[in-house]
Amino acid sequence: MYRCDTASTSTAHTHCRSPGEGTPRKIIVDRGRCIGSGTCALTAPQLFDQDEERISVVLESEPTGHRVGDARAAERVCPAGAVRISETGRPR
Image (tube, rainbow, N blue to C red; front, side):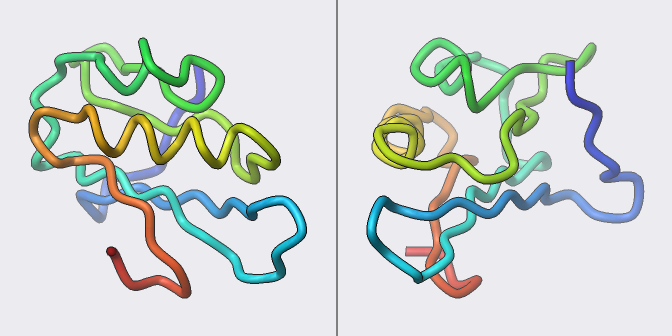
């Protein structure tokens, strides 16, 4: 399991790019908002896991292709709204 260095912040960031696009995207997990339901890990297990406290962590630093769509799906199904996708660092 990937360990996020989030001791000083409550948000973990991961960069990803859509196929054919040069615009970086970030998967943002607000660890303070995460309720540990695991829907992100079930929806996109190649991108998300949970730590010992069941809080979401990001596994892949630069997903490409269909995994960008998987990240957006995880954003849609998160019941707490803790998973967000942003462009140039600003959440949608």
